[in-house]
Length: 360
Image 1 (cartoon, rainbow, N blue to C red):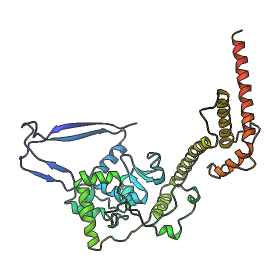
Image 2 (image 1 turned 60 degrees about the horizontal axis):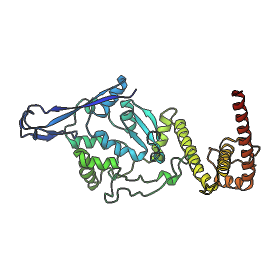
Image 3 (image 1 turned 45 degrees about the horizontal axis):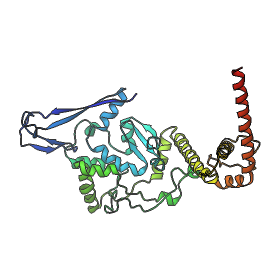
Image 4 (image 1 turned 90 degrees about the vertical axis):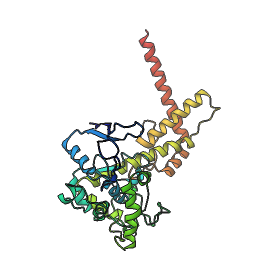
């Protein structure tokens, strides 16, 4: 069930007109008259109402919003390790898939708040979760207890996309069942500022102060300079800790790899069997039959055309091997075309015969 939500503007309560402050969690508060003054100076608060489908959904949302900007900051910390939190749950990301389909590019881990805090190494006692932090610094110090925290998160502010080190793509099927090499274990995390982070820098004071004040101060003081984990070690921990996630991650990656291979094959097929404006109607039909037959033979192993390759055209994970297909088409394209055309003609004649029978 989709969550039902709505938003309301409520006049600001009756408070002294000169008071303005920021809460420790980063929520801006603006005090004015009781809302009965001039409309141009009247202030409102926004009340967001969400109807949750289950108690678990409610508890999760309360958990996320308990401390204002806390999860905006923690989200930035855990993202380079391939993890993310949203309004539904805690997930492991598949970064290479995200630009194609962000929703599919993740695997569910848990929506248990205590489990999330435990995995991140954060204290889940009432000391921190039953009352607000006394100050922003107290909240930042709590964030710094996350076992993935390093004050070098944005060590190069002028080049936030700078990365020192590479590893195999997380969607590379050849590395799915193997552990990381020594080089991968030493991989440096990329210090990336995403568009959402840039927006928070401009709109969320608590987030900006964490990035511009707390992190530089920690570096000056020599605190939290080490990178305690790597993307690869964290991913392996996730696979070991959460049952079925390794298999689901692999399945999701393989599906993505196959989908991308099919899309690429479709593009290449247009290059291999090009259409032209000067084709007559019969040539266009012939090309359509040929392309359809090639797809069925290569992708489905269809033997109804009487033509099959001598060697496999897809690798062990289902990716089309372009060089093998090119070689196959060089030898068999005309034979496939003739068989496809004859099959089409036979089907057309049969459809005409049945049509005539219906009108008799």
